[in-house]
Image 1: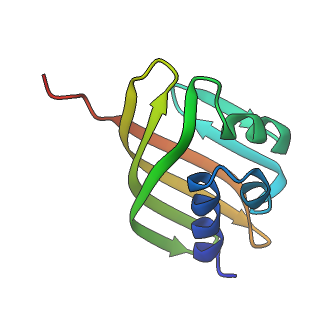
Image 2 (image 1 turned 45 degrees about the vertical axis):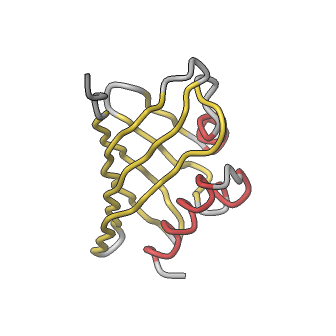
Length: 118
């Protein structure tokens, strides 16, 4: 698979909450950094974040654009998911994936939450 195809597979795994599918896209020493929220290191920490305790169900993810240069893939999109409190998170994101050996070795997620209209 190309790097973009690996990222597309990873995103589909999240849409289906398929841990095995997501984890197969990652290196064992993967890092996931979301400024202001968390910084996870290692596949076990990553696995625990797939189904964050604050959320329920699978997210709806739309990718608007994917760009690849060398071993970096950037995916821009939107995500909606429901929190256990009933609040629906509606956000835009830009994910920067660093690839190594055809797998994701580092992910930086920049997220902007949409504010519901009053």
